Structures are given as structure tokens and as C-alpha cells.
Image (cartoon, rainbow, N blue to C red):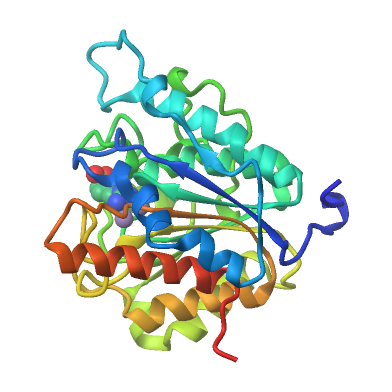
Amino acid sequence: MFADIENNKFIKKPSTVSIISFPFNGGQSHPGVELGPKELIGLGLVDQLKEMGYGIAETSGVVDTESLKPTVVAKGLNTNNTEWVSAACKELSSRVEAECRKGFLPVTLGGDHSLAIGTLNGSLKVFGDKLRVLWVDAHADINPLNETASGNLHGCPLALVCGIDKSPFFDWIKEHLGFDKLVYIGLRDVDLPEQKVIKKHNIKAFTMYHIDKYGISKVFDMAMDYINPNRDLPVHMSFDVDSMDPSVIPATGTPVRGGMTFREGHFLCEAMAETGCLVAMDLAEVNPLLGDKEAQFKTIDIGCSLVRSALGETLL
Ligand SMILES: NC(=[NH2+])NCCC[C@H](N)C(=O)O
Ligand SMILES: [Mn+2]
Ligand SMILES: [Mn+2]
């Protein structure tokens, strides 16, 4: 058995990772994001993790999202590909849950950020109300389903995970994340309905303003002090690569200027690793079809190094 969750004794720094590829683009409208996992692995991510000493779980693998595409879809919904996002995320949830139960650390490679509906549900099932979530993103991704202007579900995952929305299309989501168990870092593009939700539920958020003002080190400490003051609770980090500045990570579908530098992003991941509390990670929104060759290479290469940093890569 992996851990004694009741006593906060989850496995710190697990030695085995499961690489879950989630080639999915149904949560947004730019083709190409489904190629993220293949390109990240193609550039050597799995070998790099092995070199760092990690065991790679045999249960690593690809979620066959295409086969989960529904043939009949409801009309008149405010969100796009609703049934497909639900079916794919439900499958992803059970994969993440199974890996966490074995004491492995699932690293889910996206795919668009709607994937967090699945990954967070999976880790919530295992760690229950001990689970804490660090959401690293330019966006808040907490649009209520009936209020999203774009209709793209990658802008809504936290509304479902936190139970603001109890859509019948997502009736498999039974457990919800408390608002006080979530913290944001990197925000700089938040829609009006999201601003209302964040204020109403008093969700802790560190925007780029706070990173500029205090520096990333202090911001990370403040974020952890809020969700995990004794550094003894399991943390799921959901990392959207558009949290990074577009000059660092250009190949992503919804870039926003004024993001984290190369070092700020890596420092954040290194600091997360240092706590020993990371139990699951998502890397979302790498789109290898956007921009020129150099932009694509940079994005994939730095995507890999962010994961390595979060898993404890250090120079010495
Ligand atoms: N995971 C992301 N990149 N989300 C971008 C969301 C953009 C915008 N807030 C929307 O809801 O459409
Ligand atoms: Mn984003
Ligand atoms: Mn996002």
C-alpha cells in the first residue's frame, strides 16, 4: 500500500513515475496540442527521467482519446465537445487514481488543460481532503460552464473540480476540491466570470504582479504556507506552459505576454520538488504545430526541463 493518508504519511519523493500521455485537443480550438506528449517523449523525456534515477512504471502509456469520441452529441450546449471531454477525462481520472494508489507519481502530458478535470479527480479520489492543488497558469481556468465566452472547456476545469458546476455531463465527478485547498501562481488573464468566482470564494491567487513585487521564491513560500504550512500534505501541481512568457514558451494556443521567465518557471518547479510533497503533475498546452521550428523546439525542450525540475533535477 502506498501510504497512510489519514496520518499524512503519503510517500514523499516517490521513486517511480508513470508517464501518462493524453493526446487530446477537444478542450480548445487549436489543432496540434494533441501532439504534445509524443513530441515531449520524442525529445527524450522518459530517458531523461531514467537517467535521474527514476523507475518508469510499466503502466505508463497513452490514453486512447480518439476511441472515446462520442458519435452522438447534444445540441445547444454552451461548451464545445462536452461529451468527449467528459469521456476522455473520466478515463484519465481512473488512470491517475490507479497510479497514485500504487505509490507512483503520475506525470500527465497534455493535451489541453481540460485534462485537469480528469487528473485532479483521480488524485482527489486517492488523497481526499488532504490533497492540495498548485495551479500554475496565465489563466484561472475556472469559468462556469454556462458563462464561458469561448465555450472551450480548457478554460473551465476548476469550475467542475471545485463543484461550482455540477453538469449532468460530468456526473462521474463525485468529490470536489475545497476552495481553500487551491492556490494559483502566474495569473495575468482572468475573465470577468472568473474574477467573480475567485472573489466570492476567496481563492488565493498570486498573479504576475506578486511575482514582480516579491520575487518567485517568496511567492512560492507564501503559496505553500497557505495550502501546506507544515509541508506535510500531498500536492498536485497542474502546470500550464502558458504560465511562462511567450518568449520562453511560444508554441502554445493561448499565449499571454508578461509571463514567467525561464528561471522563474524552473525555480518554481525546483522549489516544488524540494518540498517532497509532489504526488502528481500535469504539463498542459504544449502545441508542437504552432510557430516556426525554433519556437516548437524551444517549447518542447523547455517543457521537458520543467518536468525534470519538478522531479528534483539539480545541478549538484
Ligand atoms: N488552459 C488554458 N490555456 N486556458 C485558456 C482559457 C482562456 C479563456 N479564459 C477561456 O476560457 O477561453
Ligand atoms: Mn493557460
Ligand atoms: Mn490552463
